[in-house]
Amino acid sequence: MKTWIAFWNILVKDMRAYYLKPPNISWGLIFPLAWTLMFFIRSGAGLESVRELLPGVMGISILFGTTSMLAVTLTFEKRGRSFERLLLAPIPLELLMLAKIGGAVLFGVANAFVPVVMAACLADLGGVAWGAAAAAVVLVAVSSALLGLFVAVSVSEVFEAQTFSNFFRFPMVFLCGLFFPIEKLPALLRPLSYALPLSYGADALHEAIRGAGRLPPWLDFAALAAFCLLLFLVSLRNVRRKWIL
Amino acid sequence: MDAAIEVRGLAKRFGDVAAVAGIDFEVRRGELFGFLGPNGAGKTTTINLLTGLARPDAGSVRIAGIDCTRDGKAAQHLMGIVPDESNLYPELTGLDNLCFCGALYGMPRREREARTRELLETFGLADAAGRKFAAYSRGMKRRLTIAAGIIHRPPILFLDEPTTGIDVASARQIRGLIAGLSRGGTTIFLTTHYIEEAERLCGRIAFIVAGRIVRTDTVENLMQPLEGRRAVEFTLDGAAENLAEDLRAAFPALEAQQVGPGRLRVTSARPLSIGPLVRFFEDRGLAVGEARKVRPSLEDVFVEVTGIEADRMRAEREKPAGAAP
Image 1 (cartoon, helix red, strand yellow):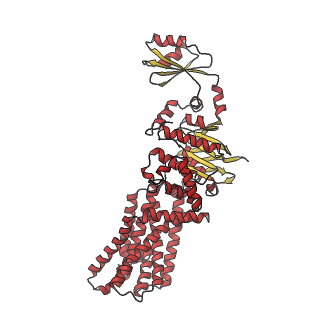
Image 2: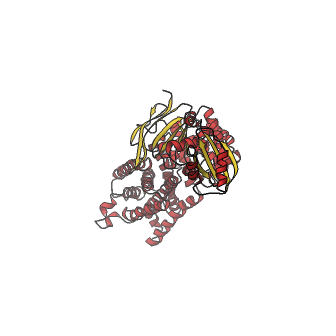
Image 3: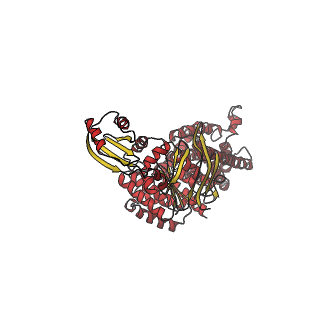
């Protein structure tokens, strides 16, 4: 019980102190809106293309929201040494990291549904498998947040966190099938695509929203879950190795 | 076993540097134990090893009988930790910071809110409770950081340089609070490089230099060899080069030490005659403004035991802006 009091309060503190601040809320609104408009205009198609663009915009909104926020807030707390308070608290490291990731995951999930609301105003979203879409959103948010954690453990300055995040985020946008099908990528790059968790998240979203996934849904979810577990274990190991000297 | 903290053969290296080189000590329950040494001696590394923020290369740590070497988290609910930097959350208010720290130790909402109000009163911060931590003065930040360390009423408290870098009034208030906690039965592990602070507060003291403990004893026992010594501090109207050396040459039974500009401390194991010394100064054109008998201090013991000049400790003490014990 005591451990869960700590878990809940870390999560609530992060939400209040970081994620629910006006600049971050506006980031969560403006960023998906800008991406949606950009791809909508670029496609040159009518409103019928909104549904086609939706999985990609949702994926990109989650990816950019979660990785940035977690990497930056953790690096900020590490620099100010307030993160030491959490390491010294009598809660298991696994639960502590889950609490820190939890805020970013909720932020990512909220970001993902901003384009959904906008799309619902512009196009008919009937026939969407909402359960599968929600599961995919959560798993993409968890894996993206864990990538943010991976970045946070690897850097010491806030600006480094941003730079390092972009180092893999931008290539992921083009390699993961969010907007360009993986099959259309050069053969040399395709194996790289399947080594990235977002490829499976994008495929699951395309399947849930458009019924146009290329892999069986169970494979997408299994791969995403495996990536989440692997990233969590690697991040825990890195935290123990680098932050508990 | 009545030990709150038991350390055996504790060692930690960072690359080629032995930050802590196989130290042993015990802190008894309810004791206020001072850990004294210059900057870089290994004080903070020792605290990190004791509290689970660092892993030892060798040795063992037991906190209230719990082996922390195997499970660093096992004893953390018994500890309060005040780091050498005031590391609360700048974006939270004083009140929210304390409530959050209480929650980290699993305190239910009502209990932590009541305790927060009590601590804000005790530490004189009630009026600033709604202000963000970032807007606090250095002394206020230090007080709130100490309050955060004891929010869950820990039986063992680690204080790392609690008065470094703060004004005289805040330092005095913090020393009073530490003494009060000690009287209330809290075991306190205090690291400091303010020798006078340790002398005033601690029951027992360990001197650590270059990662090794060179002496551990009660303040009384540490001071005993110096009890028979007489020391007089002269304030001179003027200055002369090599005055201490000249005085030692003229009076081989005496020890002389420059303790500040125009200030010379003369120490003797036997009764000290002032007259010849005054004449010695006057012969060199130096008028004696004041001659003051001084009692031997822990600083003298520290200098004798560690070989580190008091001047170096003093210089370190002056480093943080506005610092004064």
